[in-house]
Image (tube, rainbow, N blue to C red; front, side, top):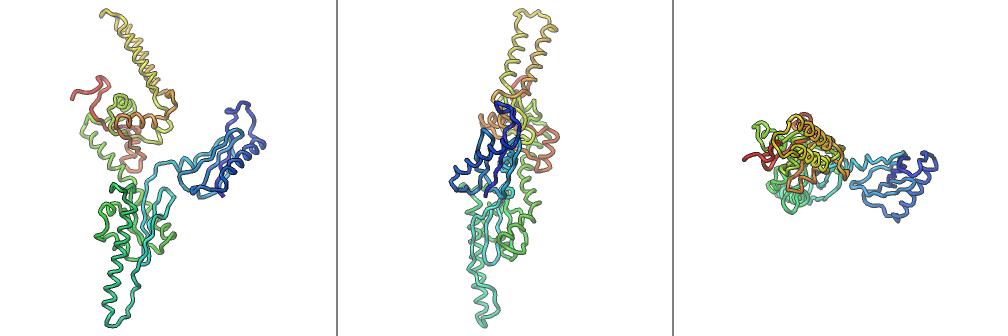
Length: 386
């Protein structure tokens, strides 16, 4: 069985404002039944979410596996679970090993997946053998190192892309034997993979139970690793500010001007703040500035009264400020608009989620917005003299 998220659209969205009642729910449930029939008893690997109302029905295949069945009936669609799945979360790798087998897993949020299993051919340790006990021990040691080499090769194949880069934020080695230490110190372990190791933990068991134990024990280590990248990026931004460099901008007004002039090389944004903020209405702002220009230069002579001209100029500037905060015509959020605008001329966007101390400081002191520039700009004269 899969979760069903069944709700009714708000009455204001209907042609007739009907009350939320039992008949409305029954009609929505009939819509849900039709959606289920369209699946033909073929459940996707990650499950499905069904959103239904009296005159609307939608089936969504979630990006992550749904772990529980849920039924919700309300005046609105409850998309919190789906929104949580859509969040950008760090990817971690886990290697759970002992003397018999090693399993490689990936973890995103609470969703984990088995990627590969490596089995050992090494025989168990024994004191028997008489005069041949030394030879048996050497053979067993050789088999163990072959097993360790196989684990290292599997880690390189799984945790590295074809270009040699890794999408993983960090790796965790765990197990109840000494194999995990041998893997960590093995010369066959790729240095690019070794740099990703954030924790090595002792486990009481292996398999799924061992993975759950490793996830629990490494929560703080993974949190620090997720914030390490953010901390490094914010350190570069902080260094430029300390040098009073003209190659940075911060604050809403200053950063918005840099975006408009295509000067932002790397834009830093707090997603929690700017996902819900409407995009600036630049068309209205540009019109207000044009009106200001016309008001100042409508008289060809140079002996006009400055105080009289200052009134329409101030009004136009005020209109420009209001237009800046107004919603854009296409209804984009500020985050989506800024991402498209910066990437259109070769810039990039870095989301500052506050996972590190420097990231949290940036969101608090700078309003969660700032950037590194291609070239210095000033709001008074556009591009600064270089």
